[in-house]
Image 1 (tube, rainbow, N blue to C red):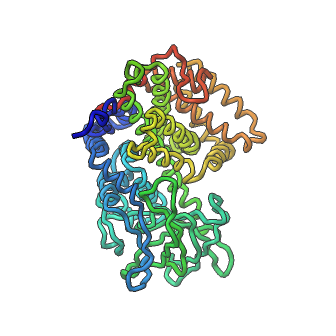
Image 2 (tube, helix red, strand yellow; image 1 turned 120 degrees about the vertical axis):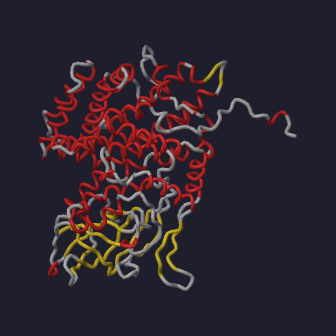
Image 3 (tube, rainbow, N blue to C red; image 1 turned 135 degrees about the vertical axis):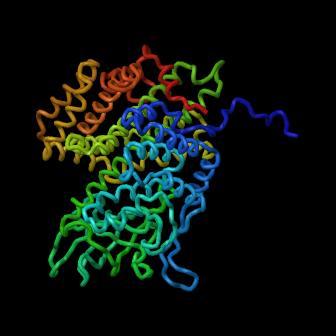
Length: 549
């Protein structure tokens, strides 16, 4: 019998057995706002089923297992034959199978596909962000493949399938397939102009042989990869070209895809990321020769939006855990959630989370629309959102962990995994400077992008004087673009904040919009979380963010 000193008191129960989707009021509202009413019943059921799975104790245990037992490289079989395979914990496959089965790679073939997938991706990130990488890459490969109708007809049905068909076999024999991507090389990083991988044409039309390496190849267990390499017709330089590299060739033999090592990463540990060497690797050209960046740019845009959604999901889970903990834990004579200062912290965190979710779903809706105006908006809004939302993720995760006190620093709480994951989306798919410079590039080269942005934020003009002032200040900044590169980060931040503010003013409850405009646009807030104006209805903000078990 345990002694009296071992009686556990004042510890919150685990946050489990709840609908991750249905408990997120901001996400539910965004889905219902952006989807055709005729789809809502179907999508509500679909997302609630995914949300209940995400909130279940079983899947939370699988996620912990996959994270605690990272994948291992198996370069050779027991006889010494080179096989270049990656072994994953069974929990990884279970999670990935559920993600594929939930349609998280099928946005391109379903009505309202981008909004319903964005919501699902945001929910699924809260289980384990690692398995979201192959889901994201597979989803994003579709627009690049569509530049070649023959390749698209062959591969798109496999990539948008809801069947997770694991194992390395010829793709034609599989009910579903996954894709990865390889652009980064050790000498260049984000500077694709420094790529040295070379592609030499073969006798078959569109077939090439690759020689080179990729310093960071995502999802190396996938069935195919999109990579950039330099074509060299006649010994010259044909420029960067996009290629499809299958892992297994049509005759069943393994393509040359040498995994040099798996990265030992800060977070994202359930997912494999590899260094890959090509040495006579067979590849098929995608798009026109020398137009590789143009071919792959829509894939990059899709993965960048997933970085926004992934960060929004991580923030939401961090806030849900913090509010749940403080709602059950007592200190200094009452519940933590009722203490004015803690309530301020939780409300501030909730505000950041809702702003990220609202922006991410608006951009997904623009993808569904596909019109010229919406495409122009995405050109400037995606890099701005990717810059800002992903950078806000780490401080949100750290502050939310602090709300749990010492408990939040213990692995069993799950918070350290969120903290380790939180910087990832800011780094991958182009770090902060790349995104900020992309915003500037859109301003300089595509005036229709700025026009679309100003039209969007202008829909909220006159509703809040602080938002109006922020729009005016942004226009003043844009009047003089001399030396703009040195202030590109500041511009990107303003673009994102003004867009978030305009969306919340239009769509969020008045208390949410008021708090955002006061603290993020009006200057009535500090540099740390928990510095919202005391006159706001903070209790309502916290109540809105609370997960309902």
